[in-house]
Image (cartoon, rainbow, N blue to C red):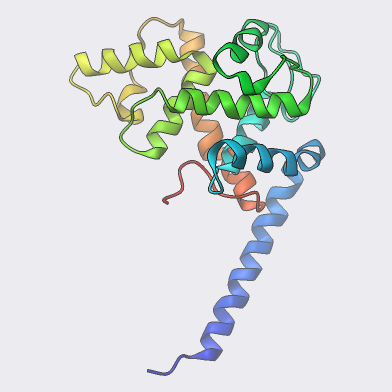
Length: 211
């Protein structure tokens, strides 16, 4: 069977057209500061996670945390692009020396520290799939690894699947209602809204992409 070059040309044109549409929609929503740090984010992500690092997810995480504002300070005292609390900034070099001296208002330190901390959490959570594992990792980044593990144990005790985010997300092992709502929304916004926004703009793959 001979290839239909005319049809293939039409399909290629359509693909390029829709890529352009997606990029045009996505780009205005991405802050200018993000574009300034894109090369740094890609370099740090690949250094810690390899060439197939989910760069779009990391970009979505920073977008969620600070909208790429290097000087951001939250009402509870979280600082910088990645919104580390001062206690976490001081603790992180103890378990991940490659982060170096804490400098939360430095873009390069914040990006490296966030990616390293995500990796540290990723290595300590169990999940049914990469996408579930990313949801648990982001939940732990937002609220603490201990809470994720307690929620998983509670889910298992109620005969739900402790490795499935969709199952575990229903169980609260003791957070306040406000903290629980924030924690459950955090992974969803990054994986389903902000990460895909950066992916559509050509920043790379996301954490929930099939490998």
